Image 1 (cartoon, rainbow, N blue to C red):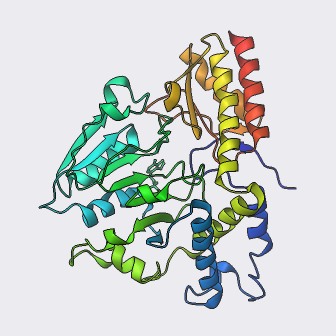
Image 2: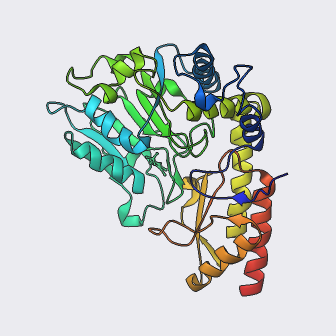
Image 3: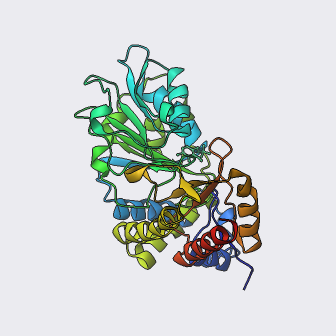
Length: 364
Ligand code: PMP
């Protein structure tokens, strides 16, 4: 058995061990092809089966209706910030409403501003991005071109428990860091997207789920590689797609279906894991201070500071000595961040909790 640590990194992140083993097992010879997945043509029947299985798994897990396309694109969620605005927000369109709950929402907003008019429907900056808004705090326009929000802010660790209500306005969401962590009502969205490298696989592929009527609105002069309609027509095979990354998505979604038993179960497990860490914070008598407030606390990225911030470096270092790695918070928030995506086992979370209690006892 190779050495494995508990990796709390925000992404690329820990993957399910059975998935890694399966990829290893068939790395040299994929299903009697005599070739590695890395070597297969994206036009081969083997690869068709991979991409179709990955799509079918996603459809089953999320109950994606027939009138939505599932795309596998490149450029990360960062390219989606531009691409969705390029496709949906034209110079003559009414403003798009952006709900900004942290770093990534801000980046999405900045890219949309290059394409057209935007309205900031809410911005948590004054409160240090410690929570998501209540519905009544949103200043939404009934004729907005779309509403964009970030389901889970990976850096701040704040997460929506429910998507905002937007009436008939198309709803667009960045789900990069909580995609497939819980059930999702796909029908409420016009477009949703997320990089795979946290919950769904490795880096290199971005999953986009888009409603068919949205595909009708693309301007004719949209560059081919940025044109959702064209990419959907070609089933993500307009050019060479990231074949290996899509293969890993197939394995991870298969693991979710067969070993975890679906997204409701995954959600339950994720909530239990998060609860363990939030309890450690709340029971530390102020030694640890959670960044996010109440209901906005993320079940994917748990963020906190130490009362004595000078001890944070020692915390990270001593945790690392116990194989609890990548716990340093993002520089913009500081402190500690434990990313506990789907593949983080409860044993890893328990080991972190034990370390937190011990560290607080020794230094409190
Ligand atoms: N949105 C969110 C919520 C993210 O967490 C990230 C990556 N950390 C991004 C967007 C950017 O993703 P990428 O690096 O795939 O462009």
